[in-house]
Length: 560
Image: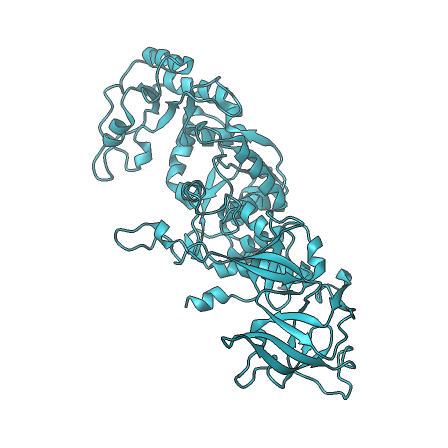
């Protein structure tokens, strides 16, 4: 009975893709799992791609199979080696490696031969119509399409024209090769889809060898077949493409790869369109593809996210069959959970108020032992300098506090983290009545965690020694858009009107000296403030820290 319960529990925990794979392995239709991740190198990968990476590589690993990386490089006008390199870097950063590195361009000769075969079978023809004419003649869901006047060209004429297209005799847009299927088919994609178009442009790998390039719907399934992909996993918007994927494979009689679809990732306050993300970059709305406000993987890395946090997020979201929108807070929860375990603690003051300890020797400096990470004893300790003049957070003092305010107040005591108890004796103000500094006294016998007479206080605040403090530019990031759905716009406006003017706020902070040595991209916790990491703009003479994530989900509360 116990064994039966274990089996049932395991089966319930499987997502639908795992169920499909286990069934195919059990019935012997598949001997070894082969997946692939097939990005087009026309932009940087984003968090949605990260989910797909985790699924494709994760499933191959779980079932002892392999996952290829294949670049869908069939449009030389939009593609670049820069994107190829960035994609490989992102996949490795996430913790995955591919079995084979392949490109659709590796198969251009084979794809051309198969196109010739379809022409010989009477299943493809050269069309002289313009793109606009083809679009107009495709019809609608309720109205059949109009056949091209060139649809009944002879096999011989089509072979001749297609060969001449390949040789570069015709200008861009003058001719296309179309599959000959059914202009009245209820699936619009079956209405004689374009297989090849003419593009006179240099390709990043094949140079000027080709001036005709295959379309996605023709190249993708055949590339899968060549690589013997057993489970071609893609997002849900490609479900209507699956019948055409199958049609080409069946018409050619080649290895029967199969396509399966899962729900794509949609996040609140986030756009996933590479076209729109590119526009933000080109128009200077962000600092680049790796701007920490962007949803790209390189932006998350720059912001201080960890590979484990992204993988954990993909696992938390799961694999679904229906599209839905995931709260951005779930992604931030995952990075908090991971950083809480691995990030070392440091002290930093972002909104400083000066404190002078009047009974402390002005010439004296002490060093207190501070814990690097209470979640990880192996992280050890560090020494933090302490002096007569300190900075504390301005929010940690109130002149007229409400009840249950346990931080510093006139006549009140707090403990400075890792060090002494101090008592506020005097509030210094400028001519306008603004508080400029506090004069406090300290208990010299309170440095070991208790006071000389055994009294304890509830308030513990962080601080930085003013003479030892390191100045830094602190970049506080908020969601790039003001609305959960950036496409939720009023009449006459666009998604760009929903850009958040406060998505990045720059302030000056004061850091403990050890923060000079933190490597770029490595997140640390500023105690009681949040998680931060040095930015790529940071230099020894001008430190720049990005806020990776707050300690709590403050944005959600503000926008309720």
